[in-house]
Length: 233
Image (cartoon, rainbow, N blue to C red; front, side, top):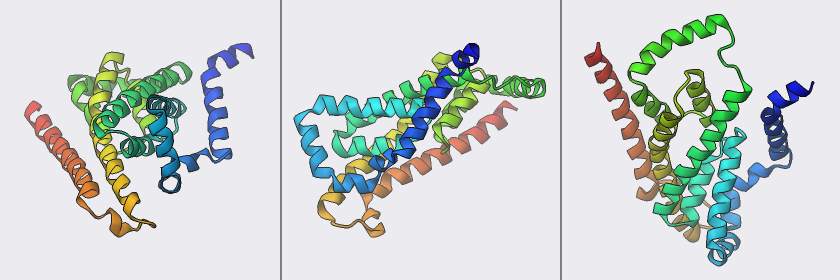
């Protein structure tokens, strides 16, 4: 019994945290509605304690990611909303990677994703192709919209090197951070001028252009992937 508890210690902690997070409805604090209703109060606190606010936000980000809670979108927007865009983008990316690393080790230590012989055999065959273009595929994995914990599980499944995981995660997460932090900066202006946000309020260059930029980036990545693979073959 003790061995089982030791083996699944992190998983047990995560389950308890997840249950508490949603049972006490803490997810309501990471919504646009909360941001709009409490903007002045939070801004006053940020102005009074900028460093405390800055690191508190990103430590929360790390904790949520480490516990498999997909809160990056809300954190990125919040960071762009309250802090300078350049600082928000860099530190959002940095702490997302730190949370991802914790997530990586939790999955690696808790789950044996290749315990089944057939699964392990299939994985090894896929690894052969993956290793040839590992750096590119890891970047692409981060660019494709999908839950962060699932992306991390895939990297663990294919036994990706930690250094490559960190480097490619930073590069792959950065475009998302740029987009959502920029949106957060744009929302700051919108919320100041609009009492009740509607869809039409979001149709402006500050919100639309970053999204279009990311879409173009993904399309270019997919085209590059196709052309690259054809050339390799």
